[in-house]
Amino acid sequence: MASTYFTPIVIIVLICIALGGLVITNFIDSIFIDNDYRKVIQLFCIGIILNIMIFTFLVMSFSKIKFAVGNRGPRGIKGSIGYTGQDGRLENCGKTQVSVFDKRTLDRLHNYLDLTPPTIIN
Image (cartoon, rainbow, N blue to C red; front, side, top):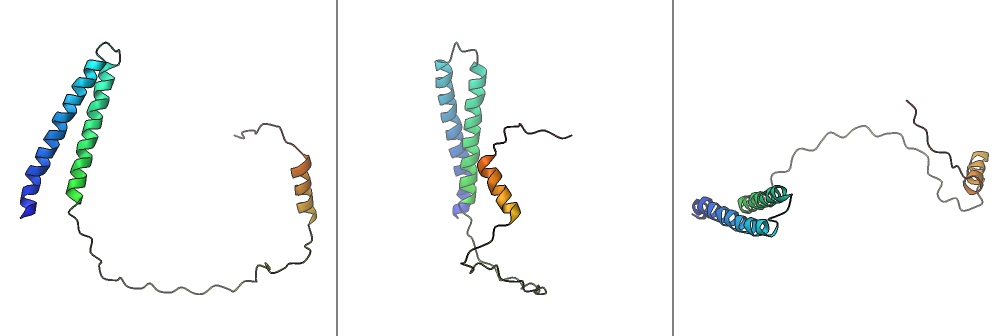
């Protein structure tokens, strides 16, 4: 029974928003009466009014939706299990060896300042 009154209520609410928006647009237009960008301001106000009307329609339309949990779908087929890898050796708490590459990278990081701009390669 309530859904039969939904369409007239939405139309009345949207007409009220449109009329209120036009009153606000006329008020803003009277403020900027001698501005060069008067038409842009009018279009901006009309755009905001339309967005508010669309938002109101969407909220009123989708507020009646009831979410229902459906049946559980079928389980997928399990794939083959991959190879087991080696541990990450995170438990190693002793002294670690620094490779030559890591030492050179750390040395450049601390001592070398590269101020050349990047180049674009075509």
